[in-house]
Image (cartoon, rainbow, N blue to C red; front, side, top):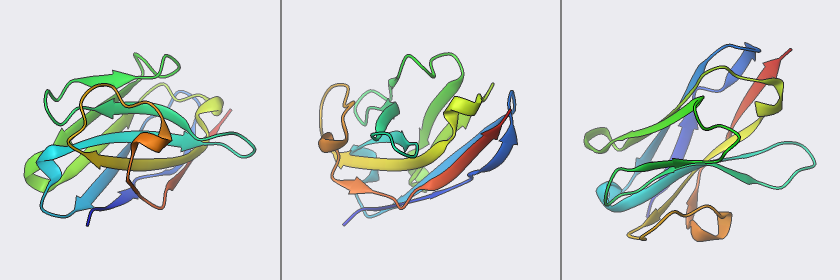
Length: 125
């Protein structure tokens, strides 16, 4: 069983930075695809960034490309989302998601089996 747990959210001013962390328990972290999604009030959950278990290649939503960086540390069962140049429209609950041994870019919520509880990110203008 995999259980992601997020941390690192908070309140930041526009233009600021935050780093989110996700620790995923379980023995299979090295074969997990990991992604970050976010959900703002009244909106659907949307893909932010993902990283392949096979290639470690990251991929991003257009809205965050060039500002956010996803990474992973398999030895510590950790994934990270470094968020720079934050904007008020980045305000949302951010979720870490994981699924084992899938190939390709997984950009939809239904592609993931395991979800964390979420961490709030608020960007003030």
